[in-house]
Amino acid sequence: MAKTIRLDIVTPEKLVYSEDVNMVIARTTSGDIGILPGHAALVAALVIWPLRIITDSGEMQISVCNGFIEVQPEKITILANCAELPDEIDIARAASAKERAESLLRGDREKIDVARAEAALKRAITRLTVGNKHQK
Image 1 (cartoon, rainbow, N blue to C red):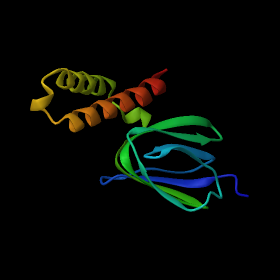
Image 2 (cartoon, rainbow, N blue to C red):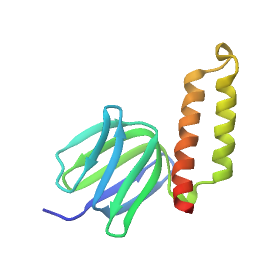
Image 3 (cartoon, one colour):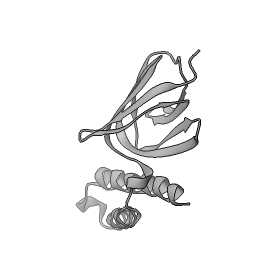
């Protein structure tokens, strides 16, 4: 069995990541999945959550917000609405977005798009989780 599997993460703007990895752990709408080389074919919807990537160098996380994961035995493709590498995350901007979303959600819920505010909060928290972990 192969030791690695190719992982490509693509957004509408660019190819965010393309490397051979040992394992990917992703959160789908049905729960977490771990993918190793040789995994059975699979397509699943992703939620806003840090994608965990394990390589010979260790573990890293990438902030991913929604999308799809397609798994083939030799390749994983993630098509995401947005994805950010840890060193691309602006911590101050993410913290500000978190505060704005929390403020909206504390207000009159009948005057806001609650689902949109909750999604913004999840994106900000995910970005902060990945970005802060990278800075340590």
